[in-house]
Structure formats: structure tokens, C-alpha cells
Length: 98
View 1 (tube, rainbow, N blue to C red):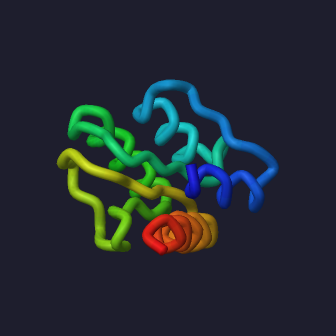
View 2: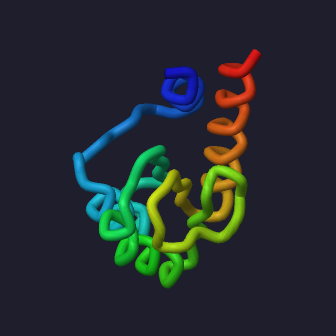
């Protein structure tokens, strides 16, 4: 909830299609600026990660490491929005541990 709250305050809104593959394809084509999710399986993200990367976007884990198609948490977006979203999500995680 801390992540959701911080991201919501810094954006015009949050949309969720219910499918990580669809959300990532929307990032790749520029319909969405960024995407993050905490629990995904490899089959949820493999194709979408490739689409985002081929479109010039960035996909990482929550530590900022290049994403691999394994189970876990992901942040994706164009270079500017990816940096902002990763920083925002990480800041929320730090607040949650205080």
C-alpha cells in the first residue's frame, strides 16, 4: 500500500488491465508510461519484457538490476519514467521498514 500511495500521488492515475503481458505491451507502445508489479511468474513477463526492451524501454528488478524472465518483482518504463518509478517504489519500501 505504501508503494501504491506514493505512485498515486506522483501520477495522474494508475491503470491495471489484470494481465502483466498486456500492461507491458502498453508500455512498449507508449500507451502507458511505466509498470510495476511485485509478484509475477516468468510466463507473465517474458514476452512483455522483450517488447519493452525492443521499444527502447527499461525493465529491471526492484534493485535496479536488468530483469530476467524469472519469478519476482519488476519495474518497466521509458528511461525517464522507469527511473522515477523505481526510485518511488524503493522509497516506499524504505518507509515500510521504518
